[in-house]
Length: 337
Image (cartoon, rainbow, N blue to C red; front, side):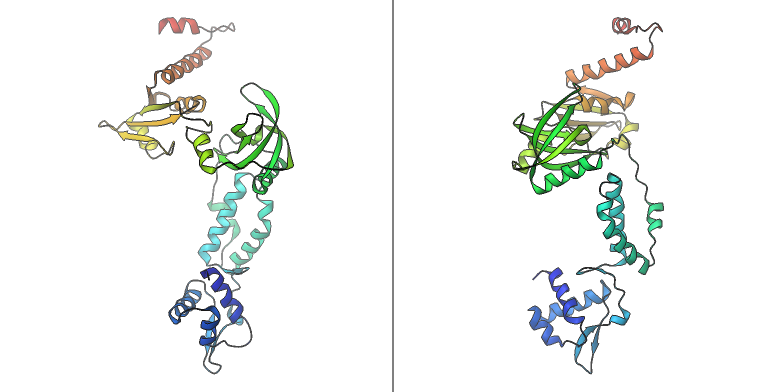
């Protein structure tokens, strides 16, 4: 019997009007006297359950008059645990307001009651917890709910998905494998029956969705990780190369504490600069991340990545110093370089 089930049994045994003898509890729960002693101490000291022993009746009981009722069905919570649960609820709601929040309202109301009994206030958490979103794209609630339902119920989805690279929208049938929250946006990793391969779809790029009756195709989780998680960023695929980046000593103070990829390799140079290497299959997201560091990063390799970053920088510079007549001096910049 697990500890959770056993503690629930204590509640059932001791909540009645009569006091239950120790021997009866030990026999009913099939435990040793030492385990009984530890259980009673835990419920009193950690879970704050008012268990008392009545010498006249030679048994244990829960004192209902002094009970804080600090429980959800079958569970007892300490003040710290209640605070942690409410904080988690706030975090879940903030991931996508209007999507997860309504589903948690019954739990939220119960938690607020428990908080009041422990002297905690809901508005204090809101005032002390700030969650900042950057680059977040809006997802219609019904689309997220359908995607979540199909993923958990193991059903296929018929979707209209826009390829942002080409601007084209295609109808596809997919078998959702898992939901992914990445950089403030939601994706669904799925088996695409059109391409007969694994793909990652941004949910906000889906304009229509329908849950089908057909069972979803099951894909081994390791195969999903190998296919969609082996390379840098949200773009999947088998790594084609390793990007090696060198950050200045000043920028290294931040970057060396960051995790860019599970398989990343890094080292700190004698001058304090930081060299980071990550595998990638598609360089689009990687190039964008490199550019945001400006002069604080140098691409050491591979040469193709180094050239692409240089090209994008030159094109950006050309847009910024156009001659005012709609034409830029990009060619002149290239000649000078």
